[in-house]
Length: 365
Image (cartoon, rainbow, N blue to C red; front, side):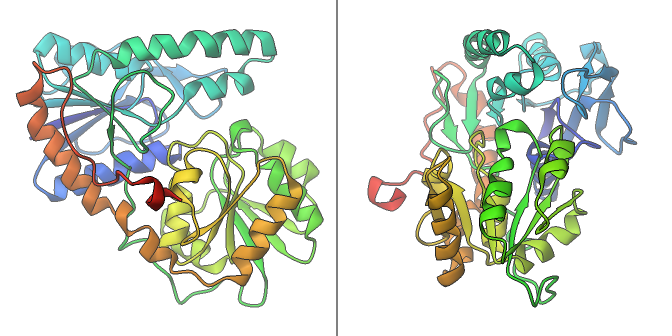
């Protein structure tokens, strides 16, 4: 099949969506499909089947760009359109599909309403924008044949298929190399933005000065974090992807206080490398992190966060086994099924499909 990925998040910016698109494209092309990526241009040299759209710098969120227009006629003929966001490139993809009467899939990656509070200074304005945005995105999602999301719960009114983004289990596995052989290190990797609540890691670092903390990432809050970080915290730029398994394998516990993740891919990658995760007891971690692969803590409670870290450090777990169900191989098999079935089901209200990631209440606990 000729598949079109339409995304507003792509290289050179590094985030979970960018790496998901890269991984999905590689896996689909390995299976014999052709995948085209339509994305906002920037300081990145496009390769084969990568189609940049002229764009401008984003004054509200550094690192991301605002796409302008592109004639649908300049996009190659496709068999299916797969949009990865509701911004201009996603809208372009939906219009291209409508114009050519193509089946459409939308993957919900990010609750964008969580980001207004860090982009707009007036809290009242940010709140109004957040409340108004969700109904607009709901209306947009309702125009797609299939909507997917990494977890069974998303704050949207549309029905969706649960499709985790998937972990490359061959790439993310324990390594012999250890960067911190003589230290107890608590680590984090991800964007340094408001909704990730990395300041909570600084709080617990002050409380547990006998441990070292390593924070890996970039984002609008980096300068603020560097100014307030205690001496036992090291803040590093994003690592080359090939070094991430070494980092995850070297730390003793992965810690996140994020309240805006859709799956928390980095937490599961750490698990695949044999490292337990201490995460806030909020979605999606109340579904993905449990006794087999880590501990959850009450968000905002320093005591609870310390207890979760200490329990992770003191307990051996088969964390890799716990996340095998999120392997990219399962995700790609299910995605291929959707691509083949959606043209047959376009006259139905939605695609009936059983997700392999549906768990009973007992399994979730």
